[in-house]
Length: 288
Image 1: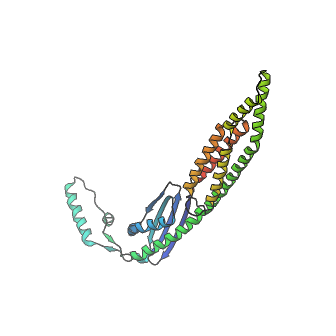
Image 2: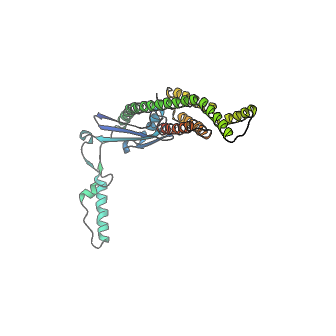
Image 3: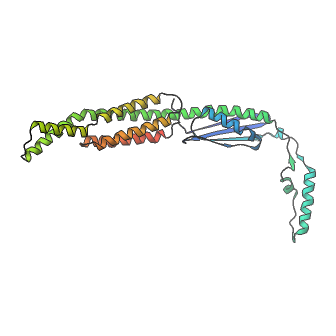
């Protein structure tokens, strides 16, 4: 199963103590890179979340965002740390005495000071368990999303493989005609120049030129690489790096085919091969 590295998922859950919302976003990346955005209450979960994501995803830049919203019922009564508030008031009056024209401090400003308002403690174990369960569902949904995208990429790659195979077969079919045309061209030029060449010398020249323009080995390797790509596309797990390596090998053979070309048809085939290979390479960059 081919997996894209691009995907998105979102999961939510409601509880007596509040609501959790978790989002996963992933894009292509050379390795697995995990970025977490967590509420303070869930900071202790960071390592567990990373491990859980790494167990199921192999590559990609993954952004995980977790949000916690407490319900009104769990917020309970508003408790004020009166001792801290009193200390802040005394400190404010002392500072007022040092200033030329002090501005009055309001009670709301005092309430905004960290620790003045106190909320009932949450059941962190329950929150952490709910967050991990939520992550499991989000990863499953993300993998499903990446799988759908991966199937589209696989279809495109198979179409390009078929097009490359057709080009290889077309080149094979015209090679004898190219060789025969080249021999006839030599004979015509010799006749125009009124230069005599015995059959043995002509045969020797033909053999030398045939060796220079022989692309059978390149065509064989192109077919072998296409067969390997089709095999890899049926494998499970991360195959992106393997496919990327095969693109390099395909491009190498296409370049050699072009450098050995002595006819327009093989030069055009080399260019078309490079176009198809580049189209495949761009899509493979997004495969896990």
